[in-house]
Length: 540
Image (cartoon, rainbow, N blue to C red):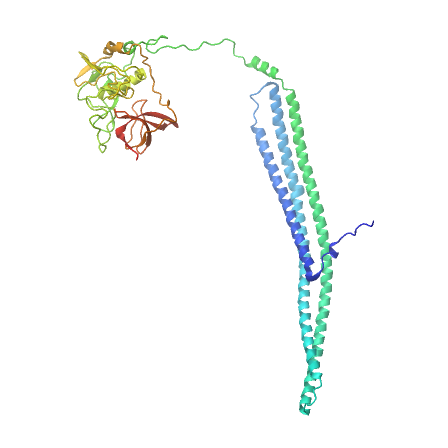
């Protein structure tokens, strides 16, 4: 069976209306776009390989193995070395792609574009001339045929015409015949010109077809060669990476865990004796035993305070009821940790709001005659002692059975009974009637620290070391409502919240003593705490 004849461009792109040229030019433009895509592929891959190589180089420089030792150190060094080798391999292949593929592809594309444009311009110029001559031939033929038809009409015999008319007809006939001969000559001349232009167009178009086939053959062959070289380059760097990994695996096979452990122990051992832990030493007793009640704790430590500590409870910071700013009340002659209370002392719990805030009513916090301090919700010196008591005892544990809200008066002063779980009149921790351990008696009296020991029996059997943990709350705790701070407020004790004007605070609980418990964020941590209710307004 005979082999099929090999098709060629010069025999396949003719036809009517010169459609072959459009089809061929469309193919050449598509080939140009494909070559451009291949060139972009080489360019981008080279950039990727270069970036990868640079990052591998940076990784190898920052891969620090100095802290390791033994056989594992050798394996880690091998990893760093192979990273450097792989980085160089990728940088080399990036350079090869640029010099051997990207640049030649760009030059090849430019050369092909020049040849294609040259042949395309020549063929299009001949095609335009051929089209113009074709129109000229068509027009000259039409004029020649009309002239011939006129001559035939004039030559037709028309009997009965006068002699004068016959003479005129003869003159018109001669004139039409001369014009017809001239149009016939023009028609023949245009046809000859068209045939000559067609011959030139055919020769140039055949040459263009041959060159275009050659361009396409070269483009396909060159693109295949470029891609083959590209595949070899990428394969080579992959083989280099695989060989590097194999060398790393061979190094890891030499790594011995027991050898490295024994080597570390031999060079870095610090001893085999286990140190004893620190034991508990109570601040007040200087032993491992804790004091049984408040009085004993104060008696044990009353002589341990240095001269720079406050000599009177009233020296501690408190709020003056006549101003919205914190004030320091001074007493120069009070005994250490003594309490001076008078009917004229100003309530301090909660602090008084600025003048434009409506003053609390008769049952509002800090009213005269109401019991409780900073820990108990009362006012004046008792409030100051409440804050000092918090610092000294870390708070009073609530939850013990409530006792009768009775007041006993002695020569040294008046004192309320401590009721941790009581009702109205309670303080920050007691939240109950007379929830304080010092009185707010209306008469001037002094109660020393040693006097509190007389009532120590009231606290026996109770754990007095309770710390208010502001971070001990449930995330899903119910919110009663929200309030907005009208004024700035600086916390006076660890259990209190500081407020900033305009700050919105969710309220967890309200109390009759005027101190409300809410949530706020301090040092990027959410916490709960107490704040004065007359410094805020409810958010509608």
